[in-house]
Length: 217
Image 1: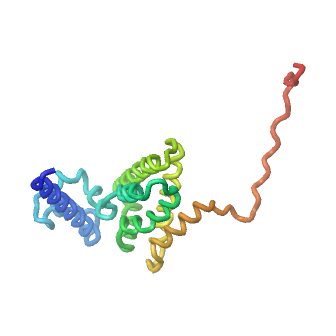
Image 2: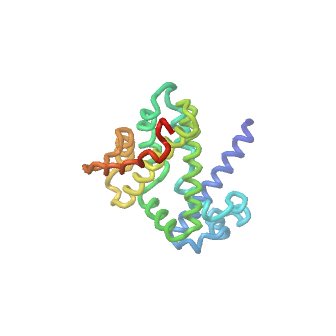
Image 3: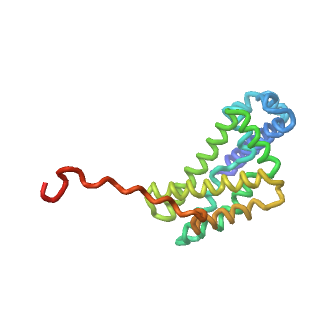
């Protein structure tokens, strides 16, 4: 990549980031209805068509402001030392990367509320989460040499830990650190989730041998 093309790409990314942040600010200030291509573009000093060149929808721009790089966790996991056990890597990577990825407590609370109230925002949020999960599973498979199923199961489990951590953090007042909650979630998953004090109910006995099923049949 030449220096000129590198500067051009950086300028494009700066414009995209500015548009995304403007969309988020409009949402926070005036509500979802105010987030139009023209209104967002006006805040950045570009045309509505420029907004459409960067984003397929306002929802994409909004979600990207809170989840700017869904592949960042996978990138951080890939950068861990070769041969490090996957659970050790997750314990080292997830607390800091998730905290950096989701942004401020206030932003997460707003996004969760808007996603619950607006199916289109919820759908875009799911796309971002699924993209992150897919990249995450691919990276786990690369590092562990596991098959697709085991890697996907581990990615799903880690994804559930992230989601539970963020929801727990958002439901609080923000004084508890998200990194600490993620760290505790990973530790519980690694140790095996507690199942409570009650023993599982005994399985009913299976059916006995049917007629003509004995050795002499």
